[in-house]
Each structure stands twice: as structure tokens, then as C-alpha cells.
Image (cartoon, rainbow, N blue to C red):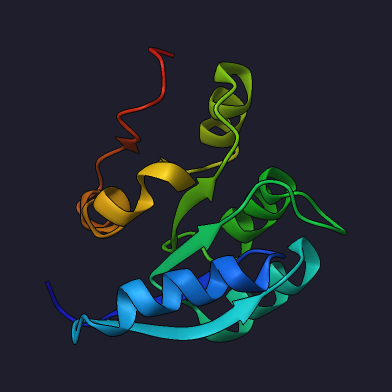
Length: 134
């Protein structure tokens, strides 16, 4: 895998720090920036053109699904992986309808984060193993 440039979007600083710690060990992944709300995520995705956006759903301003719809229109090549605690099947379906390439539950992230990104970058849909059949 070549260098993957990511944008991390979550309104909880400790979670952004967790993602940073998980990823900084990987020389093939570079964090371009962080955003803490949906509007900031859209702006940074447009400006930074990341390969991957790791997006929470429960965000202020625009929720993650609304932000993903806008990002998909602005930077169509960017892969959007939802990284969230929302396991409701309807929300999962909405996330994929909004242009999501993957859906990772936060409690599975330590094992699935990098695999989910790699799968999404290969053009395949990734869904956390803890999500019931959708």
C-alpha cells in the first residue's frame, strides 16, 4: 500500500487522539488533519483532498451522513469510512447511501481500522464484524 493520506473527523478529542496513536505507528499512513464537526470536515476534505476520511456520525453542525454526502460531491475519489458507535442497521444503510465505503464500529477499531481502510481503498465495501446483517 502506498502512502495513504487521511482526515480524521470526530468531535471527541480523546477519540481523535486514539486514532492518531493507532495510525502513527504506520509509515504508510499520514494524517493530514482533524475536524471536530461536519462543516469543518467538508471544508478540510475539499482543501486537503485526502485519500480517506474517517468520519463519526454524531457530529455538531452537520452530522456525519450529511457531511459525507457533501464530501462525496466535492471530492468523489476520497473514500469515506464511518468510524462510529452507531450500530443501528438503518443508520448503517443511510451511511452507505450517503456514499460511505466502509462502516467500522469504534469498539472494533483497534482490530479493524487499518483493514477497513485498505479494503475501502481497494474499492470494496467494508463493514465491521459486529454489525448485524444489513
